[in-house]
Every structure is written in C-alpha cells, then in structure tokens.
Length: 261
Image 1 (cartoon, one colour):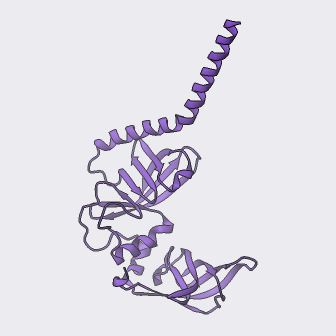
Image 2: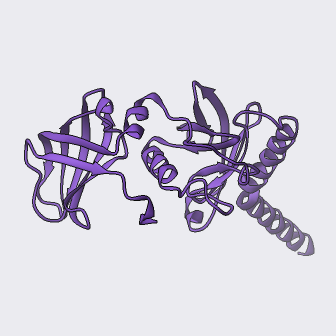
Image 3: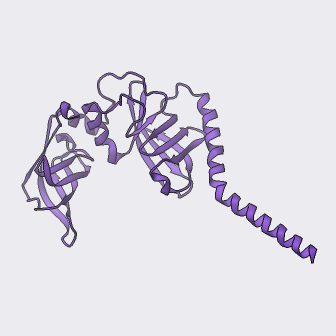
C-alpha cells in the first residue's frame, strides 16, 4: 500500500512540475533570447538599426544574428506570451518573422540624426505629423512610436528621413483630392462605411494614413482615411456618422497650426 502511495505521489509531483514548466517555458525561452540579443548588441555599439526599442506598449530587442524578442507591456498583456523570431533588413525596411505563428511584420526604419524609429505603414503619416508639429522627438523619455532606447537625448535637426512617397506631402501645407467613385458600401452598418477612390495620389501629397475630415473640421461628421496610394489615385475608407460623400466632392487637409499643441 505504501509503495502505491509513493508512486501516486511521485506521479502527481512530476505532473505538477511538467504543468509549471509548460506555463513558464515561453518566458524562459524569451529570457534566453533576450540574453543572446543583449550579448550581440554589446558588440554592435554603432549598428545602424539593431538595439532595444520601446513604445506603443512593445518592448522590443533585435539584432542581425540573434533575431528579435517582443514583450507586451500594459495594457496589451492580453496579447499573451513573449514573441520571438528572426529579423531581416532590406532597403530601409525591417521585417520581423514571427516564429510563433509563421507570420511577419514590416516596419520602416526612420533615421533622424542618431535617433532610430521603427514605424509601420499605418502609423507613418502619424509619425511625420508628430515630427512636424513638434511632438517627436519627445522632450522626455519614451515615444508613442517604437524608438531606440539610448538615443532619447541625442539632438536632431530639421525633419527625419522621408520615404520618396512622402516627400511631396511634407512640402505641402494643404493636400487636396476629389472623390472619384464610391466603390463598396456597408449600408446596414452604423456608422456608414464605404471604400472610396480618390483623384489624387502621392504626387499630390495623398499618402497612406492621411485622413480627410468631412463636415466641420472642428466637429467632423466623419472621415476618409487613405489606405493606399499610387502616383495620382488613392483608395480610402470612409467612416461617417451623418451624411455621405459625393462623387466629385473636393476634400482638403491642412497642417494643424504649430500652436495647436
């Protein structure tokens, strides 16, 4: 009888250890990846993009050989365990290949003096708006965007490097486009939504992320956000609480005044 009890206790103990190990294994693997990346970074003090980045509730380390590791910060704890994978750089694009899911994420590498930022397509317009308005670089540590830790106090002059598609936009004070067609509607949804084709593209300063307000700019009834753009046309998503855009309607976006902050 005692031998049976010993076997049962041993099985329960092993099961408990396996359960605890399974719960904390992803964190142990992530910790090992962090250590490997930090060791590689110690030997790359002047590397162009490798480093420790923080912002948008991410804590990201990345290095050419050791890959990357991401820990999610509040309030994004619900994203789950730390993520990891390999990293690639091609023509100013940083690609994170997620080993957990087989998917990848791409970021623009933004150089601004010695500072480095990683910004995805959906936030690129917001980044340049923040830079021109004086919100970036911040006057204290941290950033709304993924910024490299250790560069927070490095001085900057002028504006950050701009991808070719954004050069024309950065030189304009006013951006205009016309509604060419309304392509797809969700009539049964509230607010009203539709895909909209615009006459106006990157040559006119219409770039992904830019949002045209509809109605009173101070109290807009909706907006058309640019999803992608070619040289002279763009695709936007209209989300409107009252009214609808009309074919031929002229849309206008202006830089906010600098004292708006």
